[in-house]
Image (cartoon, rainbow, N blue to C red; front, top):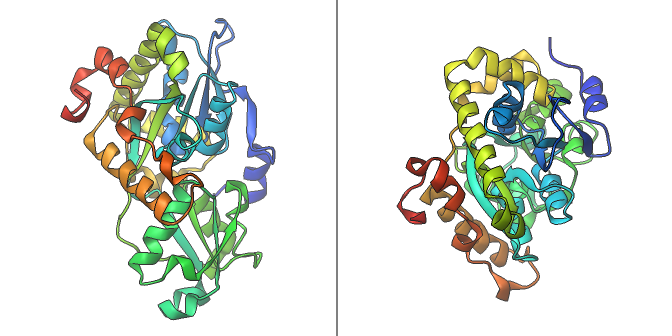
Length: 331
């Protein structure tokens, strides 16, 4: 049976950030913190903790669970955590404000994580009928970017709609409550939106236009003086991804516990996830396109400070742990 929405939101709480660790082994004192999004994309971290892989590789982080990568990156910038998981968008947006962020690698990908979900009324509309319609997004996130991509594919000018900035927790009920006509949303909030909307919402059919990557980011300051800690975390993630591939049934149960999901969500979505530790040219290509979008659509205030995407990425740590996971672009 699906998890009732009220029960789900009680679990995640309205504060947006759990100042707590999950699967944390009290036998070891943590000496650094990692902000981990509650997204299913963060599964390798939950597996690494559940299987004691961090301890195996000599590190004992406290995993601080955040609702959404935007909040994890915010905690990183505010020095409340030492590393953070998120999609690439929050890191890129914040790179316009700080030069202290450093991407260590990607550990999960999904080209069907984002959904444009609309009321049944809107699903029947022509592109010209979208003028001034309200679309809920999490501003400056993958939700925001995907909205533009999906609307353009359907012949709808993104500038013709009214953006309504929402938190991830507000998205599932936004259509059914009448607050918006559509939402651009990542999982598991897409699944929860469909549950909340019952038979009154549909996913607007869109090709898999955007591959979302989940990345591990730290600060340049932390990176310079914590080689062993970073290497230990990357080795644990590499082992966790191998566990996911060889023990999928067990990994699925860990996903359910980590992200407060149900078996039906996993059944519907498991095949879309790819868990690999890597640094590929495609990450740079994607982020460069996103940077151009930010400037073109006036989503950043100082266009003269467009970051050099390649300089946001530090391949040195992954090169020590798994050099085969790095393609030519970073060598």
